[in-house]
Amino acid sequence: MINLREVILMHRVRYSDSGDMSSLEKALGCLERYFFLCAFCSYVSENTRSHFRVSFSEWLKGRPGEYSYE
Image 1 (cartoon, one colour):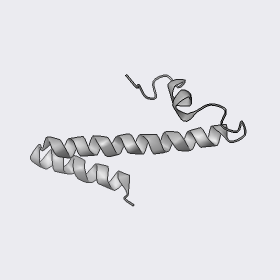
Image 2 (cartoon, helix red, strand yellow):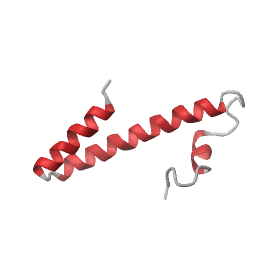
Image 3 (tube, rainbow, N blue to C red):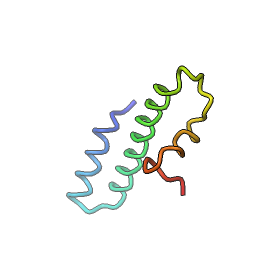
Image 4 (tube, rainbow, N blue to C red):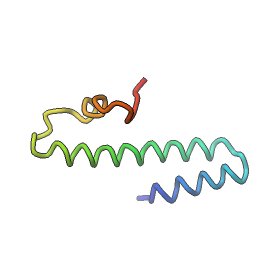
């Protein structure tokens, strides 16, 4: 288990110091994971009473500006 916020910051600082693109890519990957964890938490909160009739991917697509699959 890792603290995604700390790892994002660590890779961002490494990128700032060295310009190493792999650090930036790792930071972006962790940021995407963090986004999905936050979004999934919101999905669960909103859909518990409806017994999850809408899938997570459909729920996410219905939220303009949140995330684009394209």
